[in-house]
Length: 247
Image: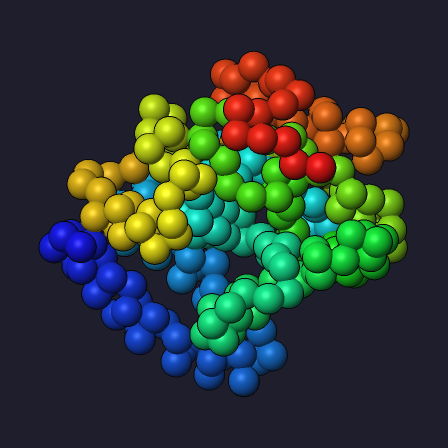
């Protein structure tokens, strides 16, 4: 681990030490806190990301459908859009789970494939609030230079929600650094240390694309979202990926 990685880790610790207590007190007093997205945005800046957002503002009751390249996506998207993430219900260390809770993470039991309808209902319930919810339909991080197949199951949440939900594709664009940032061929700890020790800044653009036409079924919506994201990234949207298909 090089000196820059250690410096950034120190910066993240100081950020948490400063904002963590303020967030907890604010939440206790008022029942909610504006600090989680500000924390994520500041954390992204500390690790070197320089985030720019393009596109029309996001309104309430919006399901965002995004490509997934790196663990950095969480910091970038959370800070840029104030979104809640959809995650598996087991995140490992309790501290990581606590951090996810602070940003109103929506938990689903992904191991139970027959429970996909229940998962969609869980997401639909979250969409009734004002906080947008983001899906990573690839199901895992990819190489950055290709999109994995999109799972369509959880897009059904928009049909189950009590309110009229908008579905918008979102592009996380790391530009020429996408292949370097892509997290799929190395252990998680090695990837985190490598990116924390990366010299220079990392320009990232979050493109908020136009809403999808809701008239199609979930598979059609997944296809439309994937095509729109691929087009904005300048990729050819093949049905398969070089690193394997996800059912």
